[in-house]
Image (cartoon, rainbow, N blue to C red; front, side, top):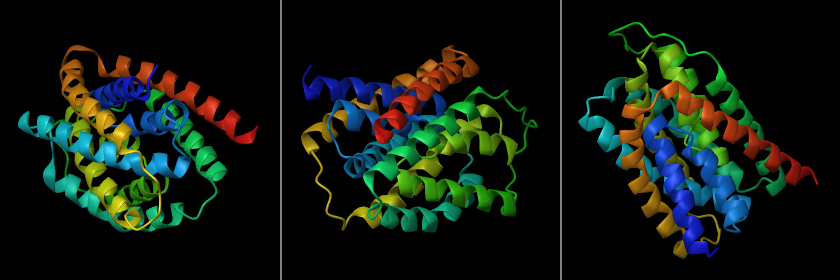
Length: 249
């Protein structure tokens, strides 16, 4: 199978995930870029940020049109993560590839466990910012984005539900705003790092992911969110085991 076809298929899956769940797409994008398309871990994390930023903006627009984005709370949450994302993005260039791979595998396991946990029930109509908790959660997500090239949406959604008591639809939409801000901050620090990127792969991957994000938004309206999360969590566990085994052998 050619690199172009693989990029289109992987991009569609990433876009569907981001559009339907408000996160998780980058946790699939990085291993797809490494194991299917031959990118190094450093190049894959940078390429993932480019792909996720473009796709998140598209998905954010779709959710904003549906009134599912809490702009004030999301901006406060994202602001706390911008500096950690930038700092971690600069640090990532100096870490061994095996360390990045193992750290990414551990993050994938964390994401899967988080998605398999019973859903918390939000208080209807809530969503006011709690500055201390929002800042702490936002900073942690920003650092994760910068270091591993993941948007952090798979952690932002449950954080918005539990910390800020968002209903699930608003958490998914608002997480896309946070993903976009964190990804842009991390990309800004990586712009001067000498990493070879294959744009003939990144371009089709990104285009397919953007189209998939629109389909993911429609899918979320038809399929139970908890069912989607369980399926995605099982996929993540399998990916994490494979990456960890590859890194230590």
